[in-house]
Amino acid sequence: MEGSKLEQKDMVKPLRSFRKKKWSKIDRDIAGSLFFVHILCIFAPFHFNWSAFWVAFVLYVITGLFGISISYHRNLAHRSFILPKWLEYLFAYCGVHALQGDPIDWVSTHRCHHRFVDTEKDPHSPIQGFWFSHITWLVNSYVLTKKVCPKYFVDRQKLERNMFMVYMKQGRPENVGDLEKQAFYRFLHKTYFLHLLLLAVLLYAMGGVPFLIWGMGVRIVVVLHITFMVNSVCHIWGKRLWKTNDLSTNNW
Image (cartoon, rainbow, N blue to C red; front, top):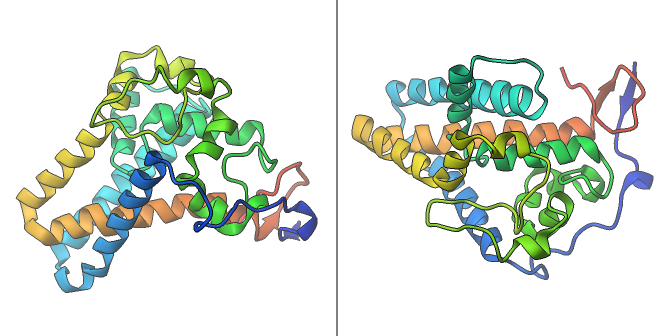
């Protein structure tokens, strides 16, 4: 067992700063969504009650553990196990409410990450800086597109768009054909934001502002940063049980 820390030799030239980067509409939309849920957290202490807390906790388990960890990650991206189709779809639908993208989008990025882990083609490696791997890769849609969508120049003009679709890339990925051929995942891709909006309305109807802030603000931010830390912290600091070609570590 040995310790690990990202060395200077592992670094590549970091991306240009926020002040100099070109902000696409996708970048602005994603940044706005992230900013909004973080702002909601500021008001959480002033709208605390135990019902709102437990709603947030239950939704954390449903969307973070069952949705992202079990469904998006282990089941869909890695195909580590097979579920009955109804259960696969149910867990995937839970992941939609984590504000990390629809299954097609999330899985395409993660599969690309493992194919090119901790190289310049990795969508979110700390070799381009801690904050890039943690969060700012999400608002670099052109960079992400070049890494995940090899035919982005052709695809860009062909992308279907509507008010409920949330794009993180300028083109279509080529590594999620198994999901794209299923009508359920295409439906989630085309209606992604609508499901988040409906959950927000439901929470507000059930418990007013406290349920909205804790269920859509605090809960989402916690799930987001737990996921982000896997990309950043767990590729910089920690223990390594085996020598591998990537920078991944264990932190527990």
